[in-house]
Image 1 (tube, rainbow, N blue to C red):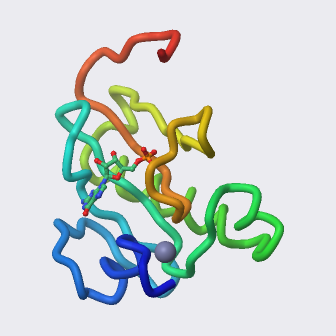
Image 2 (image 1 turned 90 degrees about the vertical axis):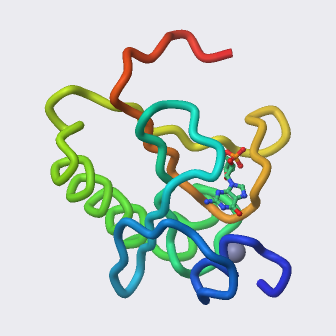
Length: 114
Ligand code: 5GP
Ligand code: ZN
């Protein structure tokens, strides 16, 4: 997708603080962190949202989950806890239409979300 900022980050056309990369998945720090740790995990291929990705490529969600497991383990928030969020569509306040898993941690998070 030519006009997608996350596709541009995948192609290294836009800078980002990349913390993990493999053949299928990229993770980078959120530009506007909502917790001391706040990074985004995305499939390198462009899918608009969770359902679109799951229906197009059954393996990609698991690959993202494995990346989240590796990263959270490496930085220690597998033990202290963290939250994984996927905002979807207008009511979900999704602002970038390239599937991304928010991973937030290193503070006590609140529930319910707004
Ligand atoms: P959404 O609202 O779609 O769930 O989340 C989009 C997220 O992407 C937001 O948390 C926002 O701060 C982050 N974001 C938007 N543009 C950029 C960017 O250019 N670089 C990075 N690293 N994060 C971005
Ligand atoms: Zn994209």
